[in-house]
Image (cartoon, rainbow, N blue to C red; front, top):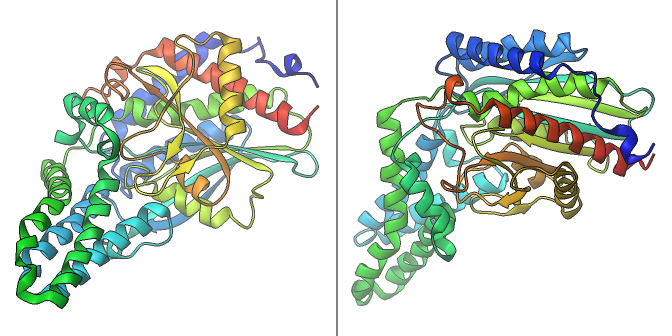
Length: 416
């Protein structure tokens, strides 16, 4: 099979696809206006997608897991304990050491996908991933997984466009504020150890300790404001645009798929609670989805900006997408003459459902649209992320690109 032989089929009715996408996004938002992680509305949105995926010729199954429901509560917990550690360390340095070291180590482990510790103090609730599969004809030689999340995120001060632009344009470590807060909190454990050795002689270090506490304090305040505001956005772009791309891609790709290719389409849960569904699925499938035969593509906000890929995932630990996959995406974009080209973005915080797979050694890449003037999709985590504010032309171009990328991956990995 040549590269040209696996280009997009011309028989697809793009106008009908566009109309169907808009209709289903509108129905989900109307039926599930607050799709919080682990909520009944998140599950209802997934259930509404099940017939769309099975109607595309896929076999659907549910993969349950448990996770907590609020990313911001988790961050406020970790860094609030860091601030408390500084407050008491003058009198109780051993307690301060335990709080500082525990908070920093726990948040690092959380982000590195090594385990959940302090997060366990928050209630874990039941959720599930919806996995729809088109089995391969014959032995699996390549498994191509598309994943998008059903839940919607909270809004607050940290998602103000001015704050986002400031984080994107900040120097050095300031571009990764959570890495800075974690490192500074860990460093405070060193001050506590010095105080335990030096006693009163460590008193001159007190102002420096409070300076090191500033990143944790800011992180705690910003996330506490989100918790108190308690407002979930409609999430039409982030990420119903990705969710609705799944059955469209399934129908297109199944028109002509080589033997040995398994296609999987995942509607994940708890992405906005810090990639809980993707992490659970990556753990579950580690012994089933062979890493040398599996490629994961995360679809996370496919419009309201120019198409980008995330080069490096992770807030504290960093997981880079494989070079061959980034180069393949760039070459497909160049061949399609994608408006603005295909650029890379490394988010200062957060991440995509590709991250947990990268952390476990899978080849994965996330696609996201970004407004260059903002550093994020337009209406990102804002009440304006509605169906009416979607750039449907860009959404359809993004889906066309995803199809072309899938076919190119198939051609490159199978070599025929």
